[in-house]
Image (tube, rainbow, N blue to C red; front, side):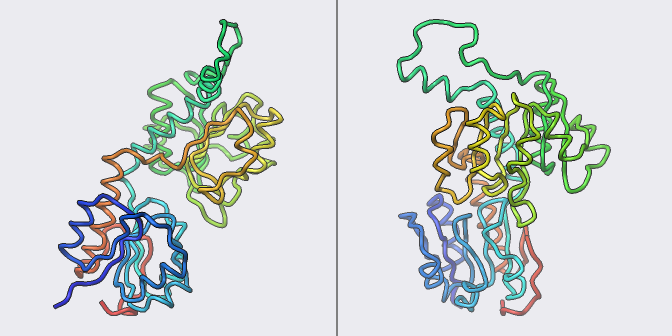
Length: 330
């Protein structure tokens, strides 16, 4: 019996591709070319599965062009590159990689908060430019982290990880806003208090965004929300591009309406709004919150495990939808 055929749409760890070859006829992309939607569709015509990253859009048009496709395994916890409704209607399983990146991403979110509050990027650029010639009392004076108020919008696993780091490690007062309130036990673990979104924005010294992207969460932070924040507050986005109105944020930073921002994700990435590149009080990183070798390996392995389990008839390990069984024959 011939092996199922899969596509690995971006370059991943070679040994994990070799592992997939034990189960599948694999077409991979070691040169890490970013294919157009038409090029991706052409490669998926004869494939039963695909290992995707956030840069491959899976929508109704692509699914119609890939009649054999049964599973899309995303190497990410987020899956806003999936049109989940279209996939479900077409009988295509989607999976993601939750849990394995929680602690690493929470580490990075807190690191970005600290770098932003303490103006590390600004001060490094100043030093590298040879401008540091003397000490002064207000040179790059930023905001305290210890004892301050940490506001988290989106209190899933990663948000809870950031809350614990702030409350237990830095003695921060933690407030959060979420679609639904956590259990009393989880609130106690995180030392976190549930508040309305506007109250959080008005009272937090540091606001961290960890919400999944959807049409409902588009521009969760725009000009009106930025206007509610304190002038010395910082804003951190490790969620997804589109959660923040980047153009409005650049204006707020330039005009000093908030003190600083730290961004790991952007609208239209890898493009970055040009105005964000011209304001000094922002720390910019290229979507690397999960980028440690152990975590990226765990993500790739979980995506591979989903392909192996599903196409082997055992069902998905971490599904994001429940398509009608049998629409596309196993």
